[in-house]
Length: 131
Image (tube, rainbow, N blue to C red; front, side, top):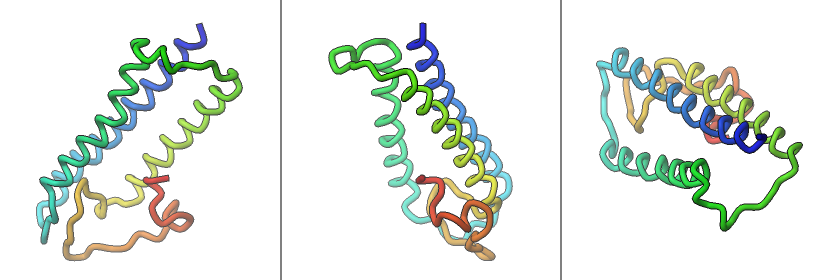
């Protein structure tokens, strides 16, 4: 059944993006011992939690067929196009984390030797992670 494929793809994108973020968060904890100043870390964590919920709640409801009242059929071509865009977005998400290197952090912080990254995908888009 094609709908099962779409649900598996959606679940894959969600889990993989969280794994990417977790990997870089772990790397950050090891490599950023010399933080200069962290801004609003508690508030940002709460906001991140609510953003995560805003993605996960509708997704879980859809995965378990609890949103059928608002359902409508999309042509398979559109859904396959969405899966293709999802893979591209996942690649872009990974590249933005990787290309930031030691400049990546989960919250806003100012450190010594902090650099503005202007190469790779950052040469094309100022904030590619939000793309």
